[in-house]
Every structure is written in C-alpha cells, then in structure tokens.
Image (cartoon, rainbow, N blue to C red):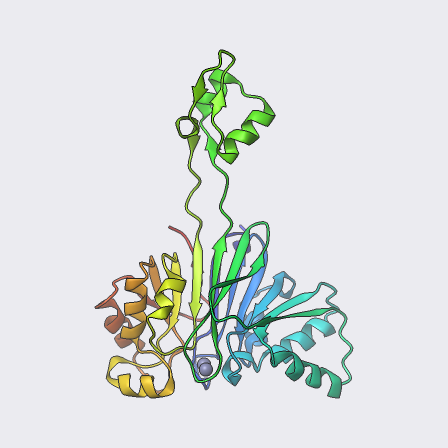
Length: 309
Ligand SMILES: [Zn+2]
Ligand SMILES: [Zn+2]
C-alpha cells in the first residue's frame, strides 16, 4: 500500500546545529492522502529524501520554523533540484518573512528562472493561527520561545462526517437529501411525523488525528495550550537533564522539559528530536522523558511514524 495515504511522519534529520556521522539536520516529511508537508529543511534534506525513496512530486507545502541554518540551509538546493527535474506545480513555503529575499538572491545570482511558482506565506502572528486548509488537512502556526522568532506547527485532519447506522437505513430507506441532512446533524422525521433524534441514528466520526511540531524552543508553559490533545507531539530535546542550565541559556529544552509539555498537554505520544551532538546515549534521554511521560520515544531517521489512536 502507498504509505503516503496514511497520516505518517518520516524523520529525515534530528541532529541539532551540526550533523554527526549518523544524524542529519532537522527535517521531516508529514504525509496524508498522498500529499507531502515538509517541515524544516536542514542542509542535506534532499539527499535524505532520495535515500528514503520519497517522491519529490508529493511535496506541495514546506514549513520553516525559524531562520537558524540547521533548519533551512537545505531549501535552496531542494528548490533548485525541483527546477532541474522540470517541476510545474507550485510550491508553498510558510516561513519567517526574510526567507523570501534569501531564496530570491540565491536564485538571482545563479540566473535560475524557476520552472514553477514559489508562493511564500509569512509567519507573523503571535498566537495560534490557521495557515493552511485543504479538503482533508488544517495546519496552524504558533509561537515558540527561542533566540530568534520561531514557530511551531500543528496539523489536524479535517473531521470526517458522521456515519449513519445501517439498521436505520434498512428500516426507513431515507432519500439522498435526507441522508446528507442527517450527516450534517439534523434529526429525521418519518412519514408519520415522528422525530428520530440524530444521535439515535448516527455513529460519531473518529476523533481527528493531529501532529504537533516544536523545534526549537526553551521550556515554556505557553506551548501547552497550542499542542493540547495532539495525537503525536514532536518536541525538541537538545540536552539531557544534567544540562538544564545550558538548555535555558541557549533557549533549548531538555528531555524532561519536553516530557512536562507532553504530559500537561495530554498528548498521546511524544517523539524526541533535535539532539545535541554532545549526547552520546540517546536512551538516557528516553529514560529521562519516560520518568515524567511514559509514551516518550527517541525519533529515528528514516523511520515512518504512523499517527493513529
Ligand atoms: Zn536547531
Ligand atoms: Zn534554532
């Protein structure tokens, strides 16, 4: 089965600031219904996409959290490769405002006249803000607390419609227009004028799945509200607990910080990432996070995480 039809996130890079022998710079690909949402694009992201056999064509939207090099230095390379491959579909980029001029100057000096359109969307509000809505997905940005303006992202499946109980359909044989009304939440009136409450004849839709991304940020309780009840939260854990002071000074988080946010936000699972090259034992981070929030996991590059209840 085509994995991109599921609601899945594939980690392409989870190293903080500099790459290591085994870990790449921040990037991940969220996919749903055959559409790819690239989140951050550190240097080498296009190589990772190639390595993991991800089709470039599925990427329609790119979200850049902030303008530290480890989160966007790979973008111009990816844009250029799309051009060389003759892409014709537009690419939407959601980013801090200055990114547009950075990309423009690189394209200008290389005399690159792109084969497709880049559509920039500036991140600028200091609150939870809807930045994208399609038939099956909504994306929101929200502020994080870092040394430069930084945003997190939350992706929520569009709610599916209610389903009508089979027994009701068999007994009453409602018309198509009545079926549509019932799915919208209306009660049903039978031929004798008897009202049947909507709740008696429908099955509620499954709770929409959601994915939240927080990298990079200092521990800050304001984040809890933004990521509340997410199915899966990816949160940076640049440092281990013994480096708490360093984390505070550098506007980053420890494994414990990430776990406290996950727990208080009542998310279902926590995925840790953005690891400092100084951390040699990632299991220690998992242990530290799990002491506070049990379903905490170390993100692994190349692994697909299916977002499900
Ligand atoms: Zn970073
Ligand atoms: Zn940063």
